[in-house]
Image (cartoon, rainbow, N blue to C red; front, top):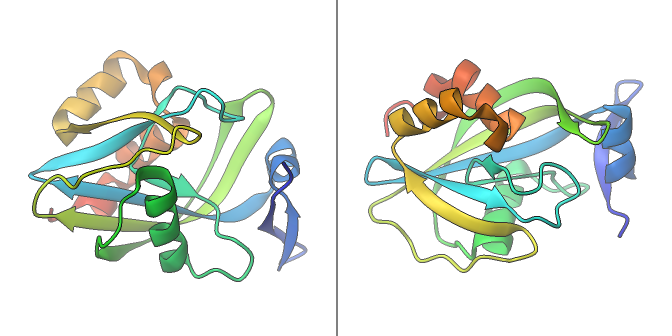
Length: 173
């Protein structure tokens, strides 16, 4: 299925097929969400049918905004679509840019709006099996240890976020 996402071409946003964007490693907008509860972070394991990084652990949710979609609206939309999660207040934690090979000759070159959602208790989830194969709640210290021991089971962007932007994303929760 073809899906167009915004991509920067000659300094302006233009729609382009998502797979083509990743084949060419073009810079494009993205959204990443981190949801925490009780001092633990919700991470997800990507469905095996995903066209890149299948079966790898990632942050709570990440995606590309639709054409004309505000980053916050995108974050709420994908939380619901992937995890059945609604009603979480999200705080914008800034914008970062990264570039990473994600396998199969594909490259993510994203300018990412980061969001943090803090819940009083672990919310009920309804996983979309086309997107997510499993989730778990993990202490960030333990997550750092797991990434150090087995980096290959985590998405490149999660490793980058925690190594380079962890304080920005997760400070104060």
